[in-house]
Image (cartoon, rainbow, N blue to C red; front, side):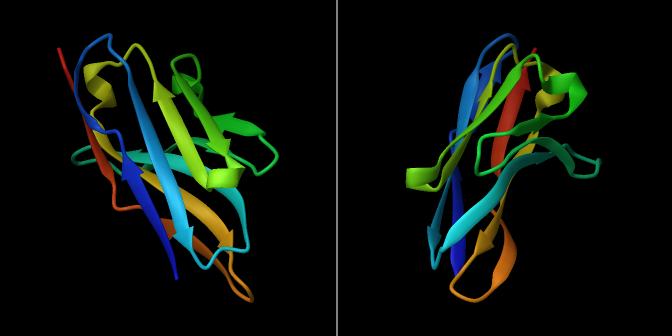
Length: 119
């Protein structure tokens, strides 16, 4: 089994910053892509950013100037640095990882981290 545990969410004023972390643990042989998604109330979950094991990144265009995704492969951890936050960034942020265990491949999700940006 693989678990993803997120941390770093919270309440911040508009213009502020937050850094989310997501650590993977369990039966892990290798992690391919890792990513962050978010889901605002009444909306579908959407991709925020993704990063490969080699460090290549992909962002949704509207966020790439304010958000930075990174990862520490030795720690099986992915980060999301969020700057210049806006009220419309308020959402539950989920991390996702594509993980090879000893003989199986699966896509795993964290439990979600609430980010609330006040105006």
